Length: 214
Image (cartoon, rainbow, N blue to C red; front, side):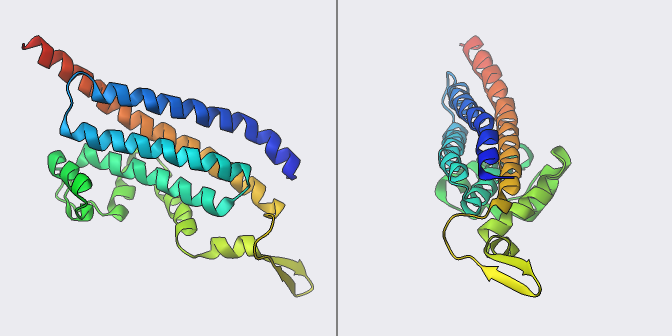
């Protein structure tokens, strides 16, 4: 795929990302609702983080910077991971306190008594959204130094020859991978919003009940 073809295919995903960011902003209004709860502080911080990650993701895919785009995909997936933990946490209030106060989240337990380490959370979320674990592991390769770095900088040229690229314009071979990265990023923003919408609906029910009791 040439760069020209890549940029033609980029128009629609960027528009989709911008729409999704606006939807995330609207979710914040629903989460806050009529009565501010302690967990709302944490949830709004997640929403803000999601938008800011997208604000960084768009210029990275425009620059064809797969290293940064892949890392931002992994961070957006981490948002899904932390939010999903809210649903299975044995003590949601404690989970909120750990996030707000910077405590060790992985020592918290879910409703089955299992510690909510990242490895455990990704497997549990994989049951809800098939493929999450595999994509998470792939995206982690952009966070840690791995074979992902070799794919971009080392180029076999046949006859036992290879060339090395350090900096400069990214090779066109990454264009198809970038499009896969963008598709995954959009999928996991939608997953994040789906989970957040469940909480927003619950908050609306809480507000209605609270107002009705006064």
